[in-house]
Image (cartoon, rainbow, N blue to C red; front, side):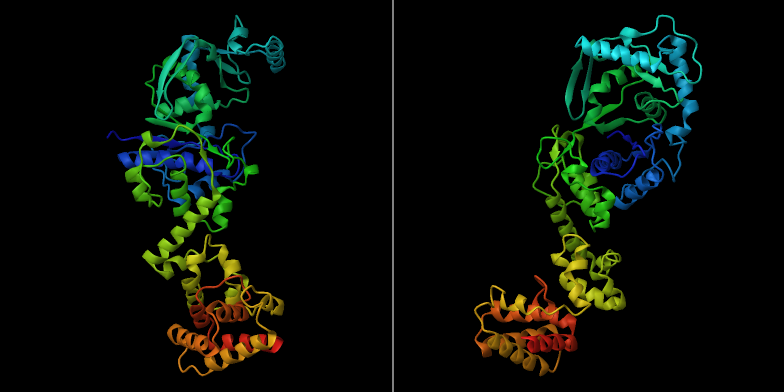
Length: 480
């Protein structure tokens, strides 16, 4: 297979949403699969929307999810610079070729006049095409003056690797702006130049650029360039399925998901499979497995619905996978910023023990903050929580007190405090009290944790330790 040279070319205009990240994943997988390379290029020519620090956020996000670029900021490469704002001399050399060949012109028309042309077209209910208002005798270009492409409208046919064979008529071709008044190039022009200079073989971007493709094809022709493979990536849709996913639909930025404790493996896995599958029922993929299985012809040509529930499910699967395959310590290393504040005063070994019995209930790492508090601080006693429990509401308060006292006695007499001996003691209590497990175990669980749920009771008591367990049981017995 021919080595693919792909690129991810984001604009540093703010946070990174999941659609941005998926647009990096597919070029990365394609490059890796073919032994090629992915270039990171920062398209920062829209200076009005530029956000300080956004480039660093892009770089950090790609590193976090494991998408290492082969050329670009931080790593360099033969096509430096990789910031479009630093490539203006290159663009001017290319645009000069078009000016010299008569395929571009300086446009002196004031913005107000262009707005007037547009209003005329709207009033006449016809599309606004600037080529119909092209100045007859354009002046020599001077800084501060836009440069436009001189289109030669015609029909275009091309193949899109996802959308299939495409066709448009001459009505979509127009005199697009190449260089803006501020001296910076437009996306429509700059990406053509950059892709050519960097040897890009696969242009992968959102389907929203599909209507502009004829203008891009016209530029390829004007420069005598071979067309790269064009790959239009369908939108990620809102859960309703009827529109493009946006902030209002509940989707958070990648940074927010990261802060909530979504693992990079899960994020990569979920987004790669959001609109792509390898034809099997497989859902969990490592990065290496994705590289091996990925193919452009399996990208679906319609939008894929975003499902946060599926992402969190997948994250839970990855949490368990890391624990099972790499061990408790490896998973613990991922938890540094996610424990409740009270955990800071406890030794690391204790926190590892807590993680070892709670990990299989986690959907995100941030769940540790709410699920493990009772391991680090005594819970507030609420008798109503006990007597209103669905398994205990038919038991009188005196019976509850008696059950607690018998439990305290049995656990106090244990010679060894470990999960096996604790389970033996709990089983003996069931026999001695003639109570159902749901009744007795619910009572003990609530008394030591006052949490909606906990890991297996014998494991919970083992980690809490004899002293803490008995102190909490006694405190509740006194409160009943």
